[in-house]
Length: 222
Image 1 (spheres, rainbow, N blue to C red):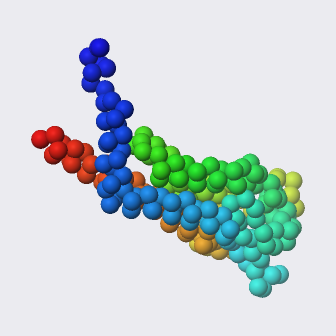
Image 2: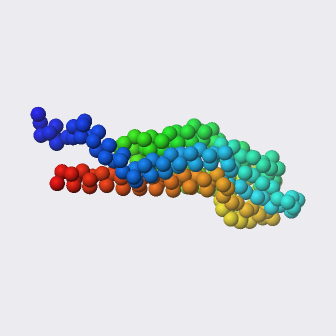
Image 3: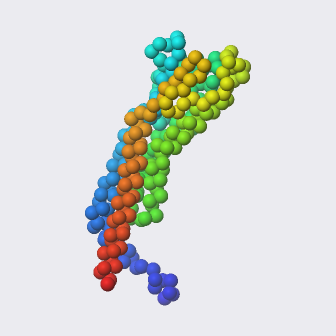
């Protein structure tokens, strides 16, 4: 038997280590947190993530567009009609790929979190990264599309000469000519943020469980 083989833990030792980790109270807390993260993330898909109000003189009550992870709704046609005059592309053309893959992506991310919850491997912690970063990726992707739309106006549009390239506000209030917009995050995004926090806490408690098991093993050997 080689020296390398002698230093590797046997299968029984590996199973014993897994059992010690599983018996730690923090491991059970970790599992519950990770399952909760997957559930909350799944629930978030049924709620809107972002909403914008367009204030225009001819629409005293404002126009609204509400964005979910895989579709948008609201006064999209009316807003497109106004945007046409300044040369902005139709809203429905934005993020087509993202919206198309969102349902599958959300299922995959949820399954990755479940995998972290039930598979005993510290290396699987990386599987929680998509869930922990998703709400921020959503905001970043939204900003990129807003920038692209505002900075790629059709020069042949009727009012193209009156509007300089701009980036609509992803959050808060923005002003473009005689129009203003107000953008706010919606419940779905906050649920995704909660899922990210729960996943992070789950990893933290999983590490605590592993460290406690290692200390117990060291004490037993001593």
